[in-house]
Image 1 (tube, rainbow, N blue to C red):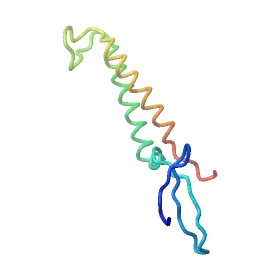
Image 2: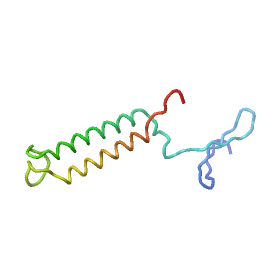
Image 3: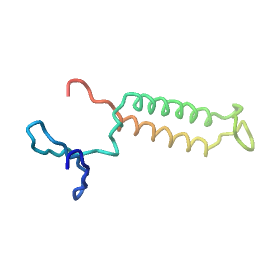
Image 4: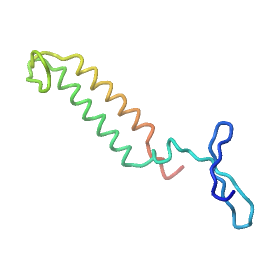
Length: 104
């Protein structure tokens, strides 16, 4: 029973033995176990900023846009929508992976 995982009704628990000999269980968060790292937080911010800049780049008419088919100087709304969605996903990822402050 020591160091076993078991699935409760809605949670997964890790069972471990205390020094006193009694068994305790601790809830295991498998999905967000490493999500509070600063690298993911700053990476999500970087992705959001780069996607926002590309969104602005593709909405400006008269500029030669790379990686497009058709008129390279026209506004490309599909590219704008794609990079706007990536910007929103980057912001959400930054909010979810935000490290906790030391005061808490």
